[in-house]
Length: 82
Image (cartoon, rainbow, N blue to C red; front, side):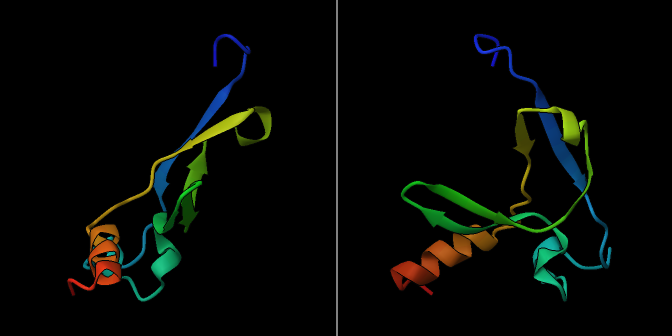
């Protein structure tokens, strides 16, 4: 970042769904940013962030996904471990 004189924006505030439920249990799975797919070339994120600091002015974003275990469950399912 410093070498190329780039600016960074941070997306870290989650939209608030049903606060009595964990993020992975929301009726709308995209209420929270989450890893929806892991691929050889990286990850695919889906979901909502409520505030993205300096969004129109930055070169790169740091997006902080929530992981309540759904990613680990998905990997286990793909391996057939249930």
